[in-house]
Image (cartoon, rainbow, N blue to C red; front, side):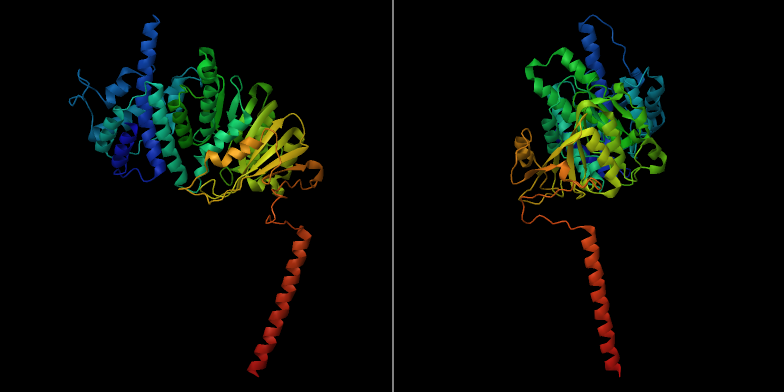
Length: 489
């Protein structure tokens, strides 16, 4: 049913002049789905309170509930045509009354951990881009048919929503900002094996893929033995995230809600604006899993004073934040560009990582795991002891990855099988840190088992060859000029 409804939404929303990309699509469907979900959630809470002989005070004022403004209905449940807004009246109500009311929750909420505050955060920097009130009416009518009341319904809807997030991630060169392949996330989580009671953190939450998958993993790990107390711990004391940009924040919050986390602990804040020297023990986490953004996605001059090791690369700043935010004995799995292993600008961060943490495994991923084609690795490290030996695993596939042929969990099965014992295979090897240059701390992936592995030469050797080639080219040009002059004579 949900799949058919999403197809109908597709047919309608793309007709609107205000929706021009997959990003617009996900943004606009998200706030509509969220408000429909919110009404169903309030109904469930009210019914639950009645069964327990208690009174439930609704979060949303009656005038702004879904059934009041979006789908007023008659006694038989059909749309009340006398009360239902459409066209300019509907668009004006949404833009000038509904959104301002919802934004006001941010100021009215008791604290940031409440559903009220999340509502205010979501709508503070969000705008309705659907320009036609008639198209908006048709979208509302379709979404009104959706139900969020059972776990099966939420699971089906969340799976379809994930597909939309993936399409959005694939639509631009910064796809990784919104979508990290779920098979990769699940593999990282299965390798780390978090347990209920751990505090799990993603400081670059994006669409909350890491947190959603951790939530599902922890629920499944207990199976039928999942208690009410376990679920309460999962809901309120386990999953934490931060996200700077408003759209990923909205999508991440919505994604977690659809997966069953009622009031996600995602803060709408700039992680890098926090001085890492102010991080205290109470701020630290047992598990950190993340895919931090890289490149010029930050005004470095405004945040670099928060880090002892300055860098123009945001991913290197995030690495410092993660190292500082990890508890002693805690474990991290971080996706990062493979240049982190060798880049001179990252030497200081690598030194900090190797001295304060045990970087015990590096998973080398092929190109095109991310649609932008960026080559990445996953760093697995544990806080509290220095690195002595690093187990490398190079994922070699017999096919080229792409949008129509993405990474799957079978691709990563051999890595997971060999990860616990750090087995040596044709695709894996161990590097002793004593054999690494102490000045450069170059940790580049060099598989000694592959004959076709690129041999990296010393910089002096490369410069010498370049000089020889320049001299040879100059000599050839000199001979060529002689021949040209001779012909002219």
